[in-house]
Length: 261
Image (cartoon, rainbow, N blue to C red):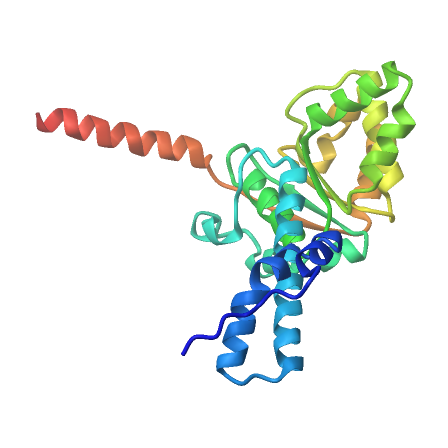
């Protein structure tokens, strides 16, 4: 015989007031299940509350991922370590526990174009979101544009304060696009503000010896390197571009099909 659970007065309204949406959706089926299994009231309540907490955490993580503004979603599972035999896999796995964020430390991916740096940085950002950290992704050019526009509008400090709320900021493609003196100075200020306060994840195609090409001043470049690397894990990628290799494979397959006709 199936027992129908009668809703107590004001329950739906009270749950809505308390923003307990998962409990509101699940209390009845779980109550009927608990009654059928003769579950103790405390166990039923504990299960219901745990479900609410779990669903809230999942929604919060999804918001973290959306707020990060990743250009695409990448995971470490999808990264090909076989294509990067010189990459320190153990060191990569270690940073993916995301403990560096609590230490306000940094991670730097250095390597040629198309060797997986952006993939790894996005996957690391995703992992940080899964650990409930606030993350922001931007290319170096996009970040500098944000800062320049904020300065022109007289709200640079406000923008820096907004960025300071993120536990980790990913600065992708440092060195790909040349900066002017004003942009380089703003980027220097941003990095200096985060030093030993919040984490940076940086990807760059330039070895540190060439960072003066970005910051247009050997002294400024040395100061930036000092701040970025002081508490950092530096990971080196190498080899040919994944995209170039994929294009060559595609071309070879297409040629093979044409030849078979």
